[in-house]
Length: 278
Image (tube, rainbow, N blue to C red; front, top):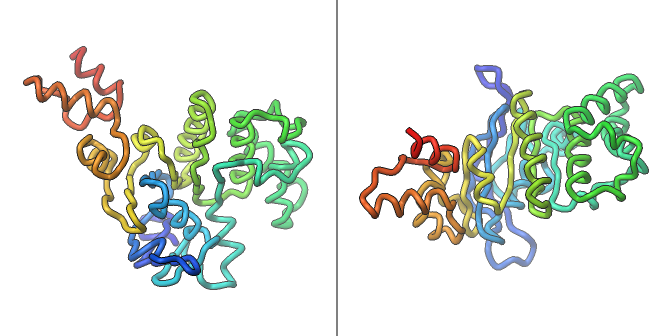
C-alpha cells in the first residue's frame, strides 16, 4: 500500500496467531507499521514469536485474528497470496532449504522464471541481483558447494531478482561467521538505499543498531518498540528482556557510575571513540 508520501508499507493490525494444540497464543494483539526504505529489527528470546511474526508478513502464516495488510493486500485473501509472497520476499536461517538450481545463476533465475517473465527480463534481473549481492563470479558454480555465507548471499540474490518491496530475513545471519555476517549486512544497506524495506529477525543485538526501528517480543507480545537507542540503549532494561546488552552500553553506564559524563545513547564503538577523542 502506498501512503500519501508514495511509500509502500506493511500494516499489522491487532494480529493474533495460535498453533494447533498450543497452550498459549504464539502472537497476541500485535500492532506495527513497516515502511519501504527502512529496516526494522525483531528481537526477543527463543520462542518469543519473532519467526511467527515474520512468516505472517508475507502470508506464509495467516492471522488467527486481526489483519496484515502487505503492500495494500490483505494476506488472508487467497487471491493475494502469490503477489504478497512476491512483494514481501523471505530468506531463512538455513539457505540449503531454499536451493533448487544446479548453478547459482539457475538458482537466482528460479523465481523470475516461475513468474513467467520473458528470457531477456530474467537475464536482466539475474545479472542485477548477482551484481548487487557481489557474487557475479559465482554464477556458474553449484550452490551446494559454496560456503554458508556465499549460500546466504545466493538466497538473498534470488529474493532480489523477484524485485520485492520488502525483504524479510528470518535469522539469515545466525549460522554465519563474522565475515559472512558483515557481507550480508552490507548487502542489506545497499537494499535500503535502493528503497527496499527490510525486516530482520536476529538474536545478535548489535545488528539491531543498524535498524531504523526495533521491536522487542516476549511471549507473543510486543513489550518494547521504538528507535534502537530507546529499546536497547539501557543495559539493565535489555537484561530484563532476557538478552545480553551491548558492550558499549555497559561501558558507558559504568563510566557514569564513576562520575564521568558518558555520551548519551551511544550504541557503537565509533560513537564512544568519537566522544573520547572530542
